[in-house]
Length: 456
Image (cartoon, rainbow, N blue to C red; front, side, top):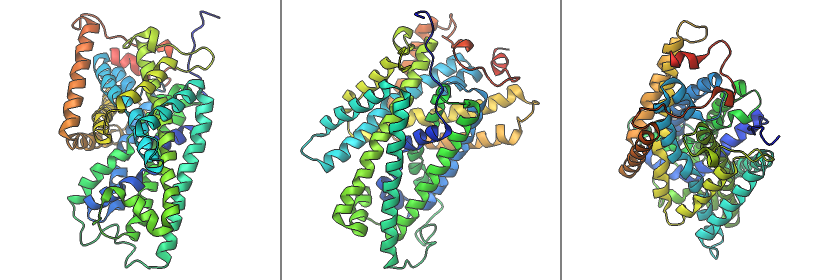
């Protein structure tokens, strides 16, 4: 048995995968960023969220297509190297690493800031260590425990958001709004402000793609993962837009004393100080659940790249025999909290957006390449495989251009570092890029054999 290869265990259901995706997106995030989106859109936050949902849904359809054709973990990294080529796949995976390495840190940092506000006697750095330590322990113990804990936390986070909505509705019952349509379009709205606000809101959807990193741990991944990707964006988008609509009715217009604290002040307004303190727990609960889900998907991407030999295989490409978890990868992502001890939330967030939107663009391009290589076969239509992903790519490229100069500089430097690493691995492209053996993961869709089309 000592020579038997340990593989990921495929046990997750559709409900589990959707719960991980929603937890990744953090249901209470709409309460946190509502004021910023409302101010940017001229008091039409729900419209901005609806536009962002539509834009992200286009890319979600591309991920769903790729997950159906390539039901293996690795997400944009695997899709790119199978369709665009191994060097391109390496660079996409390298850029996504920037996203996946820093996302757990951001999730823990957000949660620690909330906990420090609730319990100021304990500093942020101490909460960071506690949060990272707990999620790391759960993820190391095994997928079954992680799944159960995440479902409980996601359910609790959604319940607390809905409780906040209920208090808002009771408050509105005592003060009838002038118009229920005003949050969607009003005299302060403009066709330039709403798309700009939607670009900011789109950052709230980062993570819907992470469920594709769980393909090898999901039952019937070819069918389950595509459905999960679409459901996560649809459920998350509807929840964000609906909650934003209710909040916009409570506070019409986009003028606030402090847009960043509107969620808390509105909780005080509709339910009192004690209720506001409890709704603050929604952010804390969502933060822990998000950290758990983010660390899970991040460790899987590191494992897949280690299994490929892109990262040191002995460290990154092995699983614990009993728990079937990539322990080293989980520990490494947990250690990233030490980096976050000296970073502001704004700086930490700037690290992740570059990799996310570049990966989105790459996946949309992959769908078009798949069409070119497989046109004429059943089910591969021009509209779904060319028109929709091309439109989605335009959207994600636009979002990429809206990033701050800091994010673009950091992302560009990281990409240059990855290119240098690729040159070293391939000896100046005189050697092939390290590649995943097809026997290491599930086979591609029967009859399509896209890997042969790529190599032809």
